[in-house]
Length: 411
Image (tube, rainbow, N blue to C red):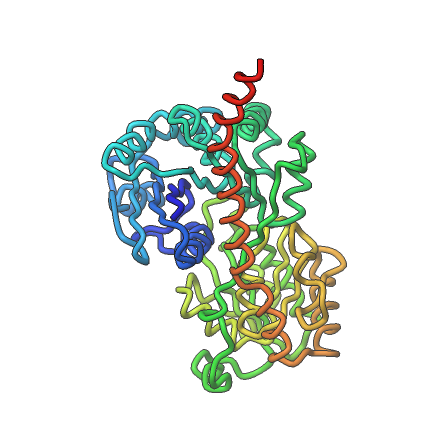
């Protein structure tokens, strides 16, 4: 059995149950294969007070030091963080604080074979520093902004390229992200594409859709927009599109984000200004079980995003039998490429949202056909791909000393 250590700042915890849940989902499927044993190190920035007045930093302080999640041991050791000015130092600060932690894990008897790191900056870069210090191979999975945004800055770009050289394996969740990594100078043959999957047992069509719609107060054609209330997610395009879509309603699921472009107040003001208060509902953040109901009840998901890796909301909606209207950002075209999956927007505008809604509803797919397509998007292929990559790396590592010995004996 392979013994891995998953390492990421993006991992759920008791205080932030949805934080990086896509990393946890991938790991759970890997462990369920029965071929991998895993433990998780999910570092958290140190902060002295958990008082809610300190916002997200207060939530960091409240995160437990260790917990069991889905029978996987997770620890949340602290590292020093310098808000706003510490971007260039982040990988070194994380690696410095985690070196003793990882050595302690090995000393306590869990001598892992490989570090499985997620998100390239600072997580993946720090992991490759730790791998070099501990003589452990590292696989880094790139997920979006880590290779789309951070390389715009000189020092992070340099550290990402150095990390890519040190890593034993590189994974991207879409072909688009592989291309982005290649454009930075990483050789294509070193990159494996293993897209996100969807838990098809959990995200499934409701048994009684009409009952779910009634329970959620959905009584007419309804669009759904899911994500943090920030500019990048494009909720404002979905809101504005309603002006050209009489008879439609919109439900927005999400809370105020911590990224640039926060627009929770602006969105509500937009709704008021356009006279759409009776047709737009903001329902806040929802658990996965609640979100599943919204997916199943809605008639289409609108994803007017500016950039993505491989959006989980798209996969989850399809799993629930609900087609998707989306931009062509990131890996979206790799999934939204058949009629039963939905419709692609020609551009990122409210007019394009409205146009795509009309186009989709003019030939609305059977929901069972959308679900049948989603059944090709489960986790099995990704899990097999991960295991094959890990085994290939470890196999090459085991044979390397023998190769050197043979070469030496022939000289």
